[in-house]
Amino acid sequence: MPEETIHESEETRSRRGIATFLRRITRRLRRGEPVPVNDEGTVAVDPPAETELEVEIERGDGSLSLEIELEWPEEEGAVDTDARESKATFEVYEDNAGEHRWRLRHDNGNIIADSGEGYASKANAEQGLGSVRKNAPGAAVADQSVDETIEAEEGGSKATFELFQDAAERWRWRLRHDNGNIIADSGGGYAAKQGARNGLQSVKTNAPGAEVEHES
Image (cartoon, rainbow, N blue to C red):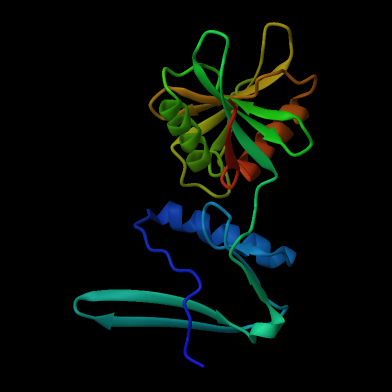
């Protein structure tokens, strides 16, 4: 039977971006969970407990290539080309002032992230949530209550989660891009710092593969 390409993608990434991708795969393999192979989490494979691992370095036409390949019998590990990695949905809507906003709602009904501000157009709101999708997973966490920054394990982000306590002594977070713009916030406050940490971690996990719905 001839070989069939089920999924293929190619793009230029920084070394930190490559590390982000490989660490994501490594964590899932270690936990024995299906492994998403694209950033959106819509394609995933579920390898068996043991697979053939092949590492190959090739030289040709003035370039080098490193290939890492896992191979297993098809009946021992499935591939899902219609996976839904996220347990949340981006809702794009128009507020009472006629501005466009988005919110990230978990499947349990809770809103776990908010755009924080309105946009002049729906396209701008979608661009804003797209930046959150891209930057949230690898963002560092800066705890402003103790002046401490914890680098994210993944790396490769152009934004930082700022964890802070507001005037009412509620814990909140905001996601600030390197350009200074706040691209997402927690919306409501949390009674405990750990609750805010759990909230931003949920955004890290669920934002990349979340579907987008438009409210009429």
